[in-house]
Length: 456
Ligand SMILES: Cc1ncc(COP(=O)(O)O)c(C=O)c1O
Image 1 (cartoon, protein in one colour):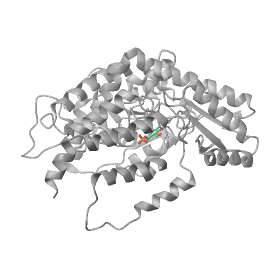
Image 2 (spheres, rainbow, N blue to C red):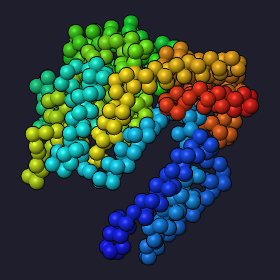
Image 3 (cartoon, rainbow, N blue to C red):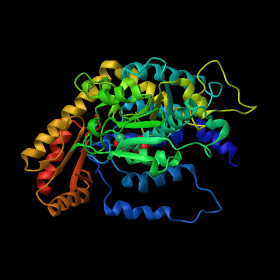
């Protein structure tokens, strides 16, 4: 061990200066950097294909390798021209708060292991519940993303539906329970299916409800619900951005005693917006919700949140114990989730919320939606066919033929100047644009449109 060396590296600041200088260069160049690495940059990655040597490497050299060979193989989400998947952007204050928190090296498992992490998670829970208009006392679990948040919520749903029937999953396990029904839209996000399968539901227990041409669940097609059912709804369809009719469906499900989960990975934020709030009417009647801060809220990755109306249900499901564990009177993160040790995710989340305030969050969402409409109009004017109702931040387009659409998609991806993904919508190939970052300014959108025009 090079203890003296490491002490020096930690304290004299030279290494940190090296990183800060690399970071500053990267951030300064963001708008000019290519959006996707070119072939040369990808080929350079071969330098990492070495055997692990017996001798270590100087810290400066390790960082230099990342700068010289890693940086050019990054995907640049920060220049406002990356429209792939639903990725989000980065609010500087949140990103830097995270850097600070990483340097603090906090473990958010217990209040005892990080009072600041415990305090800020408690504050974020309260602020978010109020911001999203969820029922008072709703509990939050700070997880890695919406896939995990869906998993947490559905584990809780499963245990609670069975508990209400007199069955304690924590004590008795699952082997002798009767199957729970799951009712979900035909176009529910794939992370929901994954979460359900991991939670032991099995594909045969899933009852898929037909959807309309935007992927919204058709209320008139929902089967009879009962207290042995989990109904899964969606705020923000991954391609069209559409929202299920929550108000009507939640009333029906509540009356029947079913558990309602809403996957709102990027769409739940509409509840904070002045112009899009109507899309989320009725969400407060659900039992659990999923949202990502690393998408629409523009927090660095590794920030999803599972909400549960009934705090006890979540805590009972996630039960935590151990004679060496010291719980406190404050918020102990591990009571709300699977992980014991984890990053203090609440710190960068708090920083973003504190920075934006209520109005700032609303403005961020409203702006993303306006930019999406603007982009859709520009693409339409160029002769592309806009295939969705642009109600939120997603735009999907195609050309006349499948072949032309595929050619344009390939040209976009090969250009390295902008990046879009593809999908199938209503049986046809489409090109997806997710307007999900504050960096997608009019200027960035105009440059992207000019690039597409050139490729066409
Ligand atoms: C509706 C929906 N749910 C869940 C997810 C999964 O989120 P994550 O990538 O944070 O795991 C996504 C991702 O785009 C999504 O759109």
